[in-house]
Amino acid sequence: MLSVVQYWHQKERPEIIRARQCRWSAEFPQEYEVFDRGSASDFISRHFGAEALAGFQACGVPAMASDYFRYHRLAAKAGLYVDSAFLPGVPAQIAKQTNHPVFVLSVPQADLTPDIVRTREVLGKVLLNGVLRTKGSPCPWFSLLSGFVRRLVRERASERIPMVTGIGALTVFDHAVACAQGDPATVLGRIRLALPDGEDLFLAVCRDFLCDHGPDLRKLSPCISTSAEEMEPLFHRPSADAVRFENRAHWSNHQGSIYADQPGTDEA
Image (tube, rainbow, N blue to C red; front, side, top):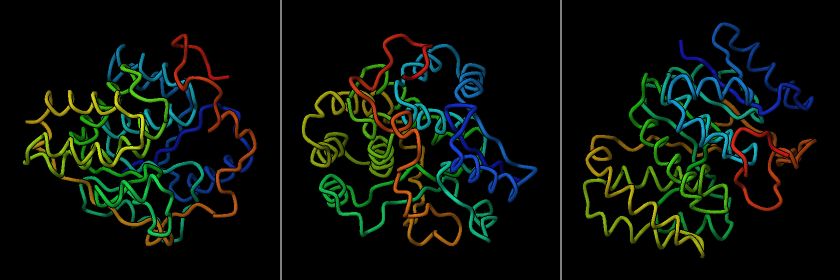
């Protein structure tokens, strides 16, 4: 049985988050794992070492640290990672029984923000990282993705969280895997067209990563994705909350740089 894994940066959680985590724990009492920043740090240090831990500590926004941790957790051990904002549907067990080596959700067609429209037109899909699953342990796909994200954090590749640890990094990585047999310059050109303006450093890090890991990328298969709308019977996020939890500033808002000035300090 695969573990169901969740994360919240503080041991003291907002009531809405605590209640939703309890629903998952009740659904999967023998397989449920929840991490906070301290236990996530211990896990990353134990399985990936000091350099990876420094990257985690450099994530200055809780949402960013959460992204970073989930990739490393799935790289090291099989499991189903589900954002703490999601609720389990009645047949949630199905999500753990799929035979796909790597499974993620994709952005619903109804989401027509300009950046998503551009990315979808160029790369074909935009991936969400709120639900991630792998049955392999360790997982080469997430191992390489984790290395990509570590490099993005180390190089301070963007001031946009989605580009460094979130859906931008995930989508670009999977596209690179899907096109790994082709010409790297062509792949990089498509990524360039898909990016928001002002992401030159992100593009430079992508170029170096493609050059350094071409053979590794060619050994992987693209993930399998399903629209979040289609998966609502299994797990869903109530549309009413729309990220508006209490303590929102501690979760998604950040003034100044998204990177922590002093690794090891907690987020403000």
